[in-house]
Image: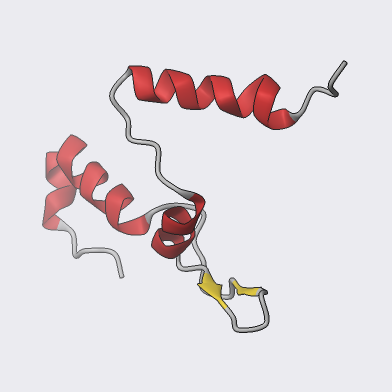
Length: 76
């Protein structure tokens, strides 16, 4: 019997639900790029300026859902 993994028991279900409500599931590479994770030539990653979020998408959605926030200067 295969050993349960986090992907099988948790992540796969979350991804399935996200797609069911209309979200687009992206690749790991795209997620890393959008968060600011830089691949280095030696196969490692530089995450000194990486974000936990997709900053541009977060900024756009905050402004969309909170009209008064639109008056504030955009996030860097």
